Length: 451
Image (tube, rainbow, N blue to C red; front, side, top):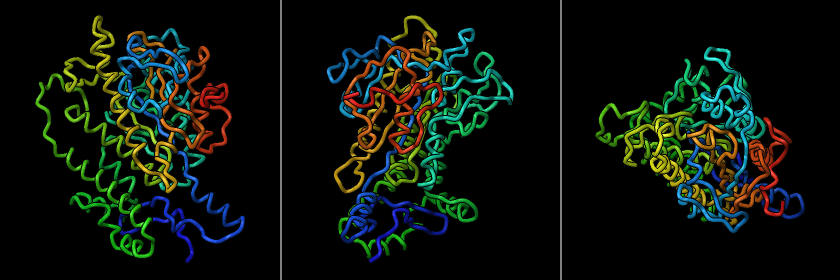
């Protein structure tokens, strides 16, 4: 029987689902051609993700003691101890393009957020003549995006402003976007979980309208492709049937979680403490978006994703941590380092949860996990929100990138090594033929232990 295409989809009116790698997709036969085809089919792609959190970290609570594999974590990053062997901690990196305009110290958040993924310097404007650079995720999308249904997906948790003046004369757009398709065109951020899910599994045009109508009735995407799925299950072996069952189950679990959280009652807090967006469900919102990113990688709907856990310079109030002041406000107050560290630790806890989820998700039939074939960078717009510095940026990279990165270590880079060097190594691990990016000076020397 002719093997299934690795780009096989389940199709129905208004729905399109990519499939995980199945035994039925691997060619059979003998000889070097068949062996090469089998090896290529089994080789799992590297997925790239970037996670942005705002306002930096409290330096005293984040600094890591020791280097190599002999290191100890601090109070703010202690939750990452649970996934220590699967993350690479990097210190002493610099976002030099964001730090060049020293006369605009008060605009550091806008510069840092826009530079986070572009490694470029933002043009200071609050008009329509914005200009920054193409972001690393979109470089990846251009090179590997054609291999998946979506070239990339851009997720967020907080609704940001797309016009006006926000930070010392910088456009609000710079604070609300880390992904840039061109120097003048931000990609935008999807903060609605259901719309993000529809992007992963819906289609455009009249069929997309049918999908959205059915989704409004709380029908599962699996209901749309049920007939074709049953037909496929009859033609594959027992291993593939088990794998498809696990895959369909994970899709449905995310759907049910979205429905559940959408109906949660708001936490009763004074309206004066409610920042813009949907703060009453911020924890659930964040987790849904993390889960959608994991699902997009698992289903190979895309291999490039970004997630803004909040906007740059956010003043989100994290009531569930017992706080009554906004995040940015806290960084400009004295004696409240312990409160800021609660936020730093919370962000690390949710990141650790996401990393653990990727590790628990199988990827292929060779015992590898999704995390083995991912590289997820976790970082911020400034090093410490109290001083607005872009030197010694906090950076953690989760995953092994198919062997391109060796985690479980703390690397203290040479002074002012560009953060963009890490991105170059990530891009290369995913098969993007790039030698430089932004202000990089080359690949990151510390990606491998022997480097």
